[in-house]
Image (tube, rainbow, N blue to C red; front, side, top):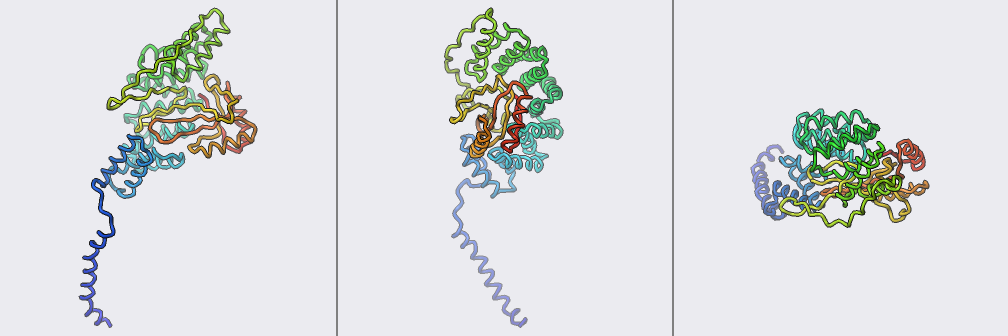
Amino acid sequence: MKKSTIQNYPFALFLFCGCLMSLPLWAADATPAATPGDDGQSLFEQAQKLLREKNYKEAKDTLNQLVAKYPMEGFIPQARLLLANLQEDFDASVAQFKSLAIEYSDRPEGEEAQKELGARYYLADKYQDAADSYKEFLDDYPKSASLPEVRYWYASSLLALDDDKDALEQFKKVLDKTPDSPWAPKALLGMGNAYFKMKKYGDAENRYLRILDQYHLYDELNLVYLRLGQTYEAEQKWKEAHAAYQTLVQQYPLAFEVSEARDRLQALESQHPDLPHAPEAQAPEPPPLRQGFGGQAATPVTVAAEPTPLRQGFGGQAAPTSLEDAEETDQTVSSASKPFHVQVGVYSKMYNVDKTRKAIKKAGYSSYVVTVQQEGVPYTYYKVRVGSFADRAEAEKMAKELARKVKEKVIVIGD
C-alpha cells in the first residue's frame, strides 16, 4: 500500500499544482475589480473629507471599513480616535477613549484620547471622573502643548466639585504660566467665579475687571459683564451693577445672558428709584459674519453661561440651551438667577429622555431638558433636570427626595 502511494505521488503533485495555478483565475472571476483609489490612504482622506462636509454617517462607515481592512496601517490610530469622537453612546465612547489612551500612550493619539476622555466626562457632568482624567493627563504629559487647556478644565472640574481652593490654584497656574494664551482670560474668569462662590466678592470683582482691562478681545466678555453685575449686587454697589448689566444689554444684544441682565435691570430700577432707567436695546442688526477658512462665513456663536469643553478636532464650541417640553410649558425656569439644579440623567437618546421624564412626572414633579450641542459633533446630549434653586442645601433636599421616588441616581448641578 505504501509503495503504491509513493508511486502515485508525482501525479498527485501535478494535480495539486494544477489546481493552485488555476486559483488566481477563479478568484479573479469571483472578486469585484478594485475601484481606482480604493486603497487605505485614499479611504482615510475620503473619511476626513466627509467629516469636513459634516457627513458623519458616511464618515463613520468609511472609518469602520478602514479599521477592519487596514488594521496595521499608520493612519489607524487617527482613524480610531475619530471613531471614538463620533461615538454617540456615552459608555462606548468612554471605553474607546480609555483603550486608545493606554494603547497609544507614547503617541499623540494617546495624548489626545486622554484629553477627550476628560472632556467627555465633563460634558456629561461627571466631574469627579473628569477631574481624575485631566489629572492623569497632567501627570503623564507634563510638556504637552495642550497643558493650559487641560489644566483649565481640570480647575473647572474641581470648581464644579466645590473644591474651590484647589480650583483657584489650578486657574492661577494657567494664568501665571501662559498669560498670553487664550486660556488666560478664561482662567481669570474661573478665578472670579471661585471667589464669588467663596463670597470673597472683592477678589471676584478684581478678577472680572482685570479681564476687561487686559483682554479686550476675549470672546466671553458678555459673561464677564453678567458676573460683574452679580458681584456688584452682592457688594450692594447698585449703581455699578446697573451699569454692568446695561453694558451687557447694549453691547451684546444677542448674547444668552441678556435676558437675565434685563431682569436684573428692571429689579434694580424698581428697588432703587434714583437709578437711571436703562433704554431698551433696539432690535439689533444681524452682526457681520466672522470669516472662516477658505473665506466662507462662520455662524456667530452665542456663549452660554455654563462652560463646556471645546472639542478639539471638530472645532466647535458647546452651547447649552434650556428647552421646555410641550406638555410642561407651565413651568418657568431661570437657570441664571437660581444657579443650582437637580439632574436626574444625561442621555444621547430621546427614548431614554422620555422614559426618565415619565418616571419623574409619575412621581409628581415637572422636569425640563437642557440640550448640549456642539458644532461639528453629530449628536446631542440631553440633561433631564427638575427645579432651579437659589442655594445648594435646598437643591440637595429635593435631590434626595426625588432619588427615593424615581429610583435613579440624582445629582445637584451648580452653574
